[in-house]
Every structure is written in C-alpha cells, then in structure tokens.
Length: 63
Image (cartoon, rainbow, N blue to C red):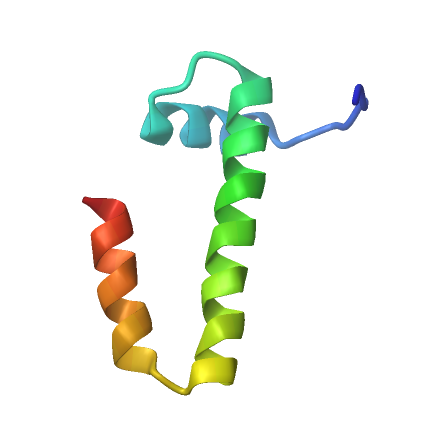
C-alpha cells in the first residue's frame, strides 16, 4: 500500500541509525512491526497474568 505521510525527519533518521536501516520505508515497517509485537506481549500479560514469563520472552526476542 502506498501512502504519503509527513514524518519528523530527525525521528526517522534516529530509527534508521539505531536499527541499521537504509531507507524510510524499512524504518516505518520495522517500527510498526515492533509496535504490534510489544502490544501483543502486553495483551498476553493480561490474559496469562504471568509478567515474569513475558519478561523472559522479551529477553529471548532481543538476543
């Protein structure tokens, strides 16, 4: 899907630098995927009530 959106240039540049990405499209897609991943984990905390398990899975995801 093609969309035209004005982003803060400094914000996009920081995301690209931190993630080692070379273009805006990749930075936006990565940020959206990360947003979804984090919110799914937070949703699961409410369902499972196992905050320590979620913390452990975040550590595993980052390695």
